[in-house]
Amino acid sequence: FKAGVIYAPAQANLGDEDNTYGFVGGEFAPSNLPISFHATVGYEDGAYAPGGKIDWRAGVAWPVGRVTLGLDYAD
View 1 (cartoon, helix red, strand yellow):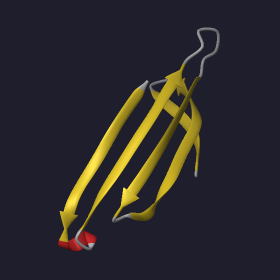
View 2 (tube, one colour):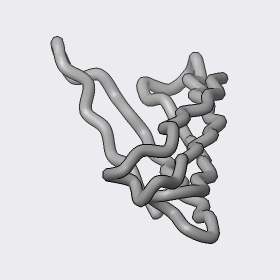
View 3 (cartoon, helix red, strand yellow):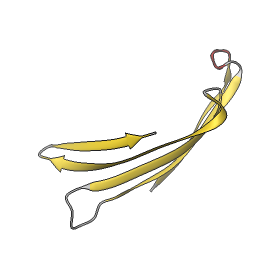
C-alpha cells in the first residue's frame, strides 16, 4: 500500500493560491498468476482544481522478458 500528500504553496503563477493533492493506492500480485493488479485514488483541491476533484486509475502489469508491460484505465 502507499499513501501521500503533495503540497504547492501559494505563489504568483498559481494565482496566489496553494494546492494540495492526497492519494492512496495499492498493488496485489496473486502467487498463482503472472500478473499484478494496482489501483490509486486521489483528491486535489486548490489552484489546479478549484472546488476540488477526485481522480483514479486501475490497471494490470505483467513481466515479459526484461520489461514489464502494463495497461491502466484512468479517470
